[in-house]
Length: 136
Image 1 (cartoon, one colour):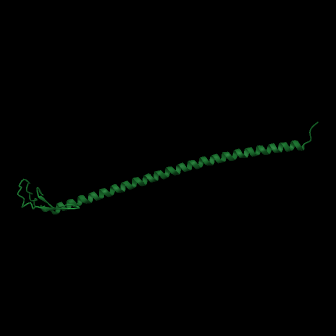
Image 2: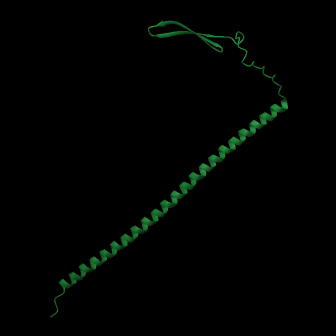
Image 3: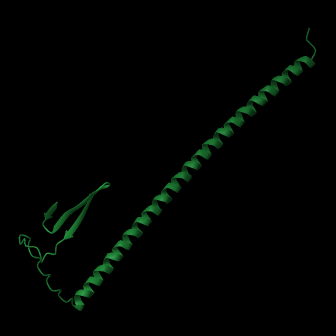
């Protein structure tokens, strides 16, 4: 069995128990009798680059590098500023929480002090009542 595809020829060889074996033959474009494929055009000759053009390219590359560096620095500054804002906000929230907690604690201590004084006054009053003889 032989099959021909444009620049490729495939010949079937002996069948084996494990499967089929093939021989693939690649044809050179020069040997091909098929002229339907377009011929490759030679590449245009490379023009010489002037010193001014090279200098312009180098300057443009330097500008791109500087622009990229400025962009990276700007992004870093924005990120740093954001971090500072977050830290400042966290400090403010922490200060507010501390003040509220301190106020609650002071208020609670005042209530406890008032209750203690009231309890002591009640005990003193009962003690006075027991200590003084009943009036008849």
